[in-house]
Length: 300
Length: 297
Image (cartoon, rainbow over the protein chains, first blue to last red):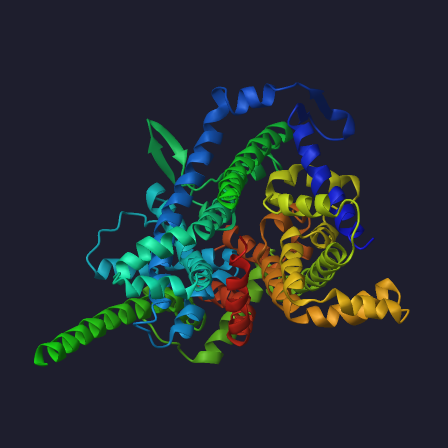
């Protein structure tokens, strides 16, 4: 059987770890001192969830969820709007732009470069003596003391901007492909009926692009939930924002929090597993909504 | 007559204005895409003091400046006890090449198995692969690490390479491609000639799948090369010897030793350059590949 290796590897390296993660979310494990005997492992049912997610120690988790969602929204909304606009321009055959191919290639470029390297590059460019800061100053903007990187909201927006900058080219190319897939005869018919370019876009392009927009939304949302590389490299100064009187670490995403409790001095496997399980269900929820939305479409 | 021609010129003028506005915005976005890389190249040739002054916007002494910084970086890495950049790059290559090969080969094999053969669980197997496409590895990372501990694979490259054999998205893509442009008749003809099944796949099917495999190889390579999360967990204990390039970047970033921005820029430059150059040559295929991947539904 040719498909056997796929399933064997999948069972070992993906399914088993998933089940194991679920199992460890029900245990309490802590190391006292060194050696195997110092390890205390107890099954404690839903206590990890009760304490670290829905209980008094749940703040850190929900803060990370909030930060992740805000980061994603701040990058996805401008990203999808700009991508749609550019896609509409690049597929407008009545007003063809020169060098279209070159634009596409350059706009996609950031997407392929290592996110960690880009994050460090931007970290340097937005640093106290960085080019961007000097440019902002030259434009008359007021920069808070200590620069932007240790400031909660600014660092959050910079991370969102990098994400946006990395991904709009990718989204644009996907949307262009989607628009090209729409039958030209629809546009011809609309032209005969005297529809304007704007009407064509809102009455034909957008409705027919819906499945692809949904696809983009879901892949981006799932990717956004796993956001790690860029915030990780911006996390050094532990910037905070104030939310309802509490200081929230504004660059810690869910996945970073899981890593924090997975290795090192703060190790708490049960806690990290409980976070993972919730993250799994959030991800599952997002993709299920998508699958049902497209399934409904096919029935019609 | 005259009104018609006036309308026509007005129409054309409006069109031209739209065109100019659109071009300006596109050019601006392109500059935005390139500018950070330009500053990276400039700063990689400057000394620490010049970078901090931030008054130089063109490269200084080009190659000699870069070589000075690069040498400085290697010395800095030694003092700061991070992995040297050359070694990190080599490690990345050692991990990425087999990963990409395994991923593309086994994805093709799996897709072939599903497209060419009829068997009882065909639909279920396919539905399963389709369903797990959306599950990211990050959610099961804890179990993954527990498994690696049991198999004594922690701190080795194996956990980064082996799971690539089960890459549902690549399988999905290969299956799409095969359904559109691969005729099962060839397989049947080869069977009549007495070729064995495995030989048919390797000698007849694989060459036909080359274009799709190349696209998938590019994306597989890039994804693996850029990966930070899983390697940083698996190789946490011996990151100084086995660390990959993104881990090197993170190590330099989080190091407490006095920073020298000229050195750091030269490091980022070295890390970014191979992919940047490869992109220049392959951009056509890559952009086409992105478009193909998107039209899934």
